[in-house]
Length: 174
Image (tube, rainbow, N blue to C red; front, side, top):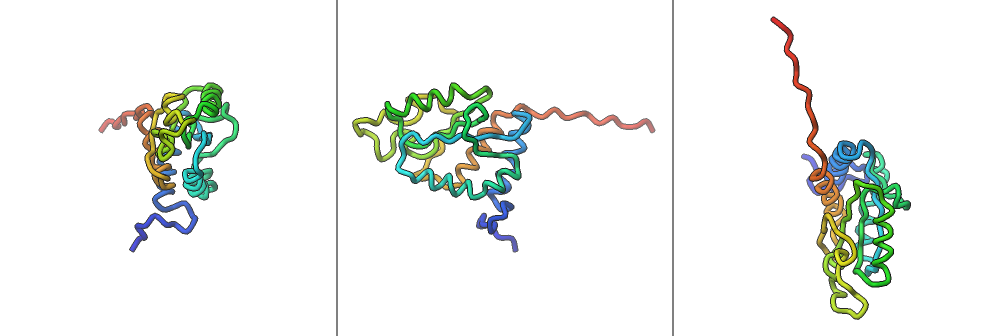
């Protein structure tokens, strides 16, 4: 009987591996190449970064499917924002987004990036990531699971991928 828990022993062929394969396929249709993700911590408690580390444990697996985490925003397709929007870091997030070439997407990860989370109402907290940039996808959770982050990326790219044109088959004459 197959293991339904999603634990694949680090091989990348469980639930996360299937999601990563779907993401790579949709990314190649949308972009014509692999998908590059840039992460910006806009001031979080570190919980979402731990979940991202969990997703990045599959880095070699994700790389195998053509998905990579990049440090250069000019090479990124997706801006992944964690943490609350503060006046200090909102400009850095905006500049990172401006450096990215279209098509580009912004994903807010964690409750803090959605609306300020547990830091809502603090003096320097403006709110969620939407206070500084337009967000294409919100992934809730405090912190969200690595699987939820990967599933969110899959949903984002599949929703924005153009329909695949299929060739009609020409039947030979009888």
